[in-house]
Amino acid sequence: MNRSWWFRFGLLVFFILVAVIHVFPTVANLDLEHTKFPFKKKVNLGLDLQGGLYMVYGVDFKKIYAETTSRAVDTTIGQLDKEGVKAAKGKIDDSVEDNPNFQITFDAANQAKTKELIAKNYSLRIMDEKPGSISLGLTAAYRADIKEKTLGQSVQVIRNRIDEFGVSEPSISTKGENRVVVELPGVKDVERAKALVGRTARLEFKMVNSDANVNVVGVVNEAAQKGIELKEGVKYSEYIAKLNEFAKGKIPEDSQILFERKSGNRNLPYLLFSKVELTGSELADAMVGFDQQTQQPQVSFQLNPRGTVTFGELTTKNVHKALAIVLDDTVQSAPNINTPITGGSGVITLGAGGDQAYKEARDLAIVLRAGALPAQLDLMEQRAIGPSIGADSITHGMTASAVGCLLVFIFMIGYYRMSGVVATVSLILCFLFTFAILIGMDATLTLPGIAGLALTIGMAVDSNVIIFERIRDELHEGKGPVAAVHSGFDKAFSCIFDANITHAIVATILLNFGTGPIRGFAVTLLIGIVTTLFCAVTVCKLAFDWYLEKKGAQITSLSI
Image 1 (cartoon, helix red, strand yellow):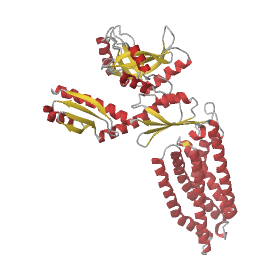
Image 2 (tube, rainbow, N blue to C red):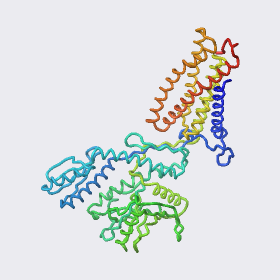
Image 3 (cartoon, helix red, strand yellow):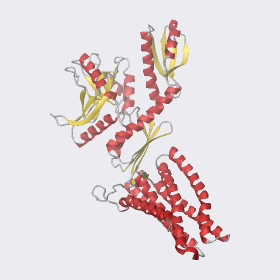
Image 4 (cartoon, rainbow, N blue to C red):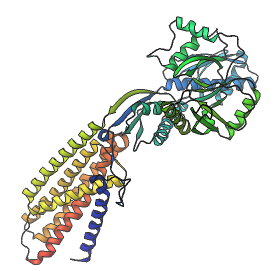
């Protein structure tokens, strides 16, 4: 054997050893925490193989656009006021799909000055204009920017929460223009996972309006008599919106009614100023603790430097008044400000103790620490897959693959004789290398991924068939075994390479545009293309070179 052959053979042995080391923990089902085996990594199973939770969330961008437009218009009115132009904002007009607008009114004499100032705001555009009034909506570029950032931030926030929740190999991705797909393999506490993922966690600080002479309980009861009440099947956010719409004229314009949660129910109404004094964006950290007196779980939070300054100024100006800590439009607590709070820290109490309260406190700390979702996510689709279904999928998938491979092996050995044996060894190594690379890359194996493994064997067989048939053609043309083998491999390579390149193009498209299991199939297919080329060309060529070298000049035929 020449040095080139030994080098290629040594490289193949090295790859086989590395592959076996990678695959062994999975095949032997080792306990990675206690095993002394040096390589501690197993194949990651996808949602369809180990069970878990599949959810699709939708984002209501019309609501986001309305809120953003409202804030931008308020800012514009403030700028106009500084320029000596008095303007007022009218009601929202949401008749235009995905582009709600607000009308502002002013003295017609200031029309040109108003338009000039609006033109400086890149986020707003004039949708309609009349003397003394202009309708403002968001520009198309700004709406596209909001959509991209909202979806991207939602994916990142959910991923941060899930990472702290402890789910291995979650899949979080966008789908279409307003969908977020979340796959959580191995999750058993479905309801808790749903609550953690979909919680907006909008933390706000608002002052309690204790000076207004309003019977808040009476307004709530009056609304209930009109059919506006929180009951089963009604979202809390929708109830709050209807209640405050009903309360217009009965409460001050700058105020709103929200409820404090007591013993798991929202049943204590508060009249709060609508103005948000501070938000959770100024939060630096949040952690679970216990009240020293009651031993009830609570969430302690620390504000960042900017939030500390704002919080200090707020509490200094409002000593002896009540400040409400509002989470997702629910008042968590409304303590009195006895002295200015300049340390930048606070506490959110959660009511009664016990395991459930502690879980709630821990999840709230995760949500606040990981960040608030930029928009409310509405659950559009949910599928909970049990682990037994995943186990059945693995069994059926592996059985089908094994039977298919066995039939291929029998055919190759029966049709190509000893060359078929070489092809069979090549196919087994191709499967071994593909599986090892999946584990080494931390890729997730899904049910379509198992189909990809079976397809890899099919592609590898195709490559061997092309090589063998090409060698047969060369033998039929009268060439000797040595010349036929070398010529067959050389001429077959371009055909094998072209076929695998076309497969790789399709797999790349699936990888870029597919989601979940489709991406798993594409990853397996791409890895299989690499291992197929290596095994078909290198492994088979090594075996033929060894046989030809061993027989030498006396060789007269091939078992092919």
